[in-house]
Length: 176
Image (tube, rainbow, N blue to C red; front, top):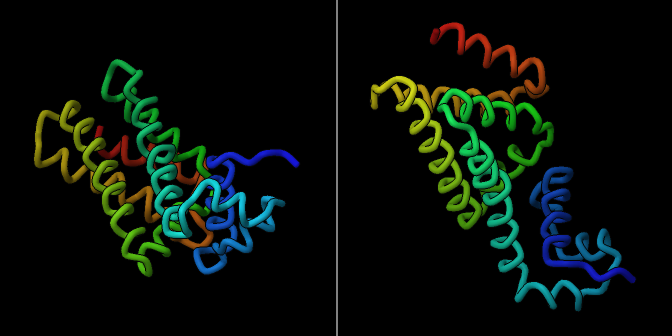
């Protein structure tokens, strides 16, 4: 039997969350999917709450902080913004929607989601400020761009890939 890492458990939790939603995210389903015993779960996590917090921390790290880090490798704010937008075009999972639905029911997840949203909007605002020099406009543009990204995932069916890219191009055209 292959040893499972803490990251393996967390990634499987994110897969279950995206596929089936928060109500399906149970220790039993995780154990079944991982093909190991309950002892393996408790080797990595104190309890299910510890697992959930660790999973949300990973979601923040990979869904926000890593993307910002990649964006920061570019020199110009327009190039940084393009890297952020490209990252949103590559994401075709339902994980973002599943986490937001979960945040409506779980105060811990809600706190994580609020912090994640703030980090993302603040970063966009920084980029738009560098591009426009106008703090008020930068704040509005950041909220506008982020709202488009979040809203595009909540339309049924979601607006993804080329459809979302077309919306981004239109915003770019409007903004000049």
